[in-house]
Length: 97
Image 1 (cartoon, rainbow, N blue to C red):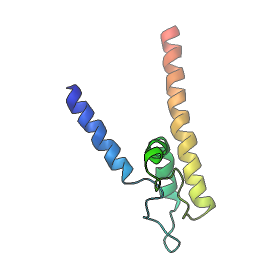
Image 2: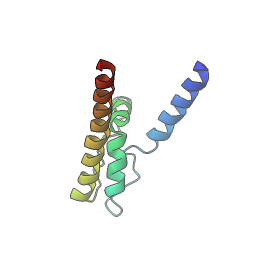
Image 3: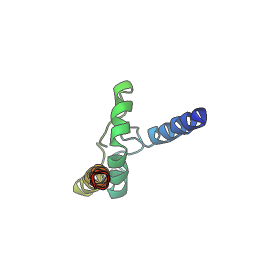
């Protein structure tokens, strides 16, 4: 069972690595937009870890549409991590009661 879980985890990491910012998918003629900003915000922790070992991977796509990409990126960062924090605090309250 643990081997299967490890295999799935590795497969998910490989799939996420293919969608990281800075990989050359976007350029000045076709910049990253709002939805790419949301995706890049959600996978920012994975991008940070991959970026330690790969010089082409970044957390933030430099070829983007501007504030529209930024909006999606920040919505994902705040919403994704904030949602996890809220769910943990609700669990703590239930355990305390």
